[in-house]
Length: 66
Image (cartoon, rainbow, N blue to C red; front, side, top):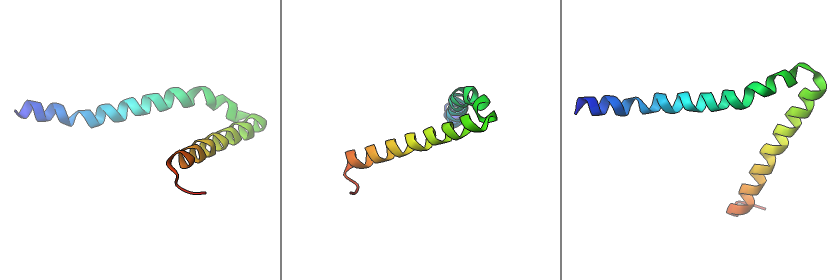
């Protein structure tokens, strides 16, 4: 039974490792774009716009406000 609980305790570390790996895979190709100011501003604007799009879409779908 102790082996079972030891195995269950490994899952949070596994989840963190997978999450960090996915995040790194998405961020790593974008890092060179931050070296030039023009592309950095465009990339930040695109990320803010994407975040706002998702926020407004979810609020409308869930009926959370005007």
